[in-house]
Image (cartoon, rainbow, N blue to C red):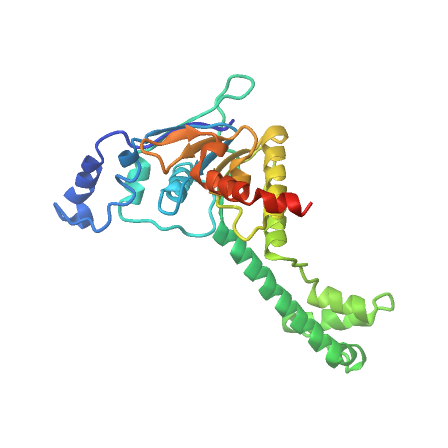
Length: 304
């Protein structure tokens, strides 16, 4: 296990704010517009996090679970793609945090593995948009080739290579005139292959299959977004396999009952004051699902 413990500032956060105000923007006793994330966790009497192979932060909107992931990711210097909401106090707050790494089989301290990163729902949506944009461009290039571009390149005037400016046209004509290259092969090699996109949930699951590597630490912010229950269960299987057999450690922010039920996960309930470690079946979100289906259980029995 790479990360064993993470400590939030245990001193009076008013002192942190005062420290920033004292020399804010080069002026003594400046004004702080937004103290976030100060007081967010101390108000819940929450200072120390002890990790397992899978650790989950549960809570409703505004409970701080995504903020906590971003604080950990920033302190550990994890790779990130999408920006996150920050504030003038964020860096100072992170600087006051501390962490302890676990030990390997030989008793030496771990280091944070290369490639460790935070993955947010924005990363996945951006991936979908990028793939769709690339597919549109490839489709447009294929249409151009089909409408006569291929014939013009192959049977038109021979391109003279006078310099690098002529290289691309020269290369495409040489390729088109090879006997072993058919029109379909030419279009595929010059325009490229479109990436297969299924539903948003299937595409999101494929994203995790591509991005998650062995022996790596990941922070996942609501990874279930855009996934159906069936896809979420597939993601659960993937995460359990990677954590149990492939050396991965996961820190997850979620309120999905399927993700919460990950085997041997430690769950911090950020809706509680003070914050408590609870079982997934004790949480309000899962209890609401349970009560709803229990109330309508006769309908399920009748439809069998």
